[in-house]
Length: 480
Ligand code: F0G
Image: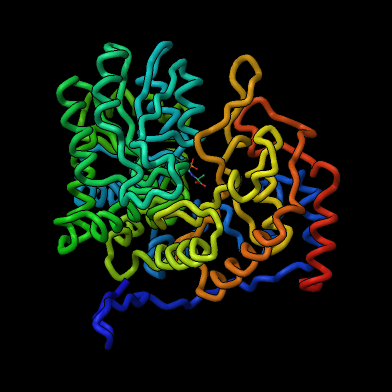
């Protein structure tokens, strides 16, 4: 954002870009939305994008790209080995992020696969601020387990702690004692996704680094949403307000032994990377690249995306381009909070997060209130959000449900994609749904996959509540 002083003396934030390519949207009537969500097994992942009005499922791979990124895609050099675009990427990673070695991978979970394969063993314990679904899956597939140790405020949706993504340092110290010899690395997710898009402070990453040094354990940073984390440090952390985003990024990442990212997020392309300064770690990781991803100068990515990634990484710290969607998230969260809707506070990155346990207290957890809420929101608005609760966890090895700390619905704001009127529409429909929440009931499985079940699982609305909710909507608001 371009920040100037307004007439009233308050900061005025203005987007430092304009839109030159747009995509037409259409809003299907509620009868079609009911049909679509039924056909999708009440799982928003299985909706066809053409049935969706505002696609707020994720920020992954759907951010608006810049004119400079598109231009770079045209001049990318297509070579199986040794392509120029890769070396351009490598030099940006070195200059901007401070790492000598870079390994391209096809997306974030591919990085998690390689890191878990190399570092995690049977009996390993990986402490982290919080898990992401694919991270947990890869660590467990490699025989390890995760240990989540966020600060206690992180699990209180009302707490306005500015850095709810911080690790509890005392618990980390304890973990080093308790699991001595079993910790292959500590993982910090910069902007903790499943905590509601909450950032990690510089003070915290520094503290984690000191402990890792003391115990000679590597620190791995998941930098998929590092752009937002850096922005929040500048906005919220004392001493950082006058530093550049670029300097803050460099300082934050300087604490990592290994950084990986889904480049579908912050750099707004489709790909991923792993970076390190350790020759030993690089060599251990890179030998697996040709087996699982591709040759070391493309790693399973299109070279066009590699070229666009180099540009996207530099745009991540362009002060005038960052923060537009954060302003919209802030606006929606504060507005919904004022009206009494249970949202995760303070406004963070990634999206607006509804607390489904408070929103739908009449639905037992075994009937998936967050899944119900995500599908009900689609039904009454055409907005596609994502369940981030019990459905997004898999059962334990005895077949029991694992209930996560937070049972959320995430309404994501991809970068530079939606406008203020979309935010107003979202607020209006969430408020309508909140006022009619008694009509929303639970979901039950029709088909439950054994792993990452939220992607492909199909459910049904218990007692056919969808039809009833659609009827009430039609009576009050009409077909649209
Ligand atoms: N780490 C974090 C913090 C993520 O948010 C994601 C993906 C990944 C790793 C995996 O990366 O999708 O490129 O394989 N998050 C997406 C989301 C899917 O919607 O939040 P990937």
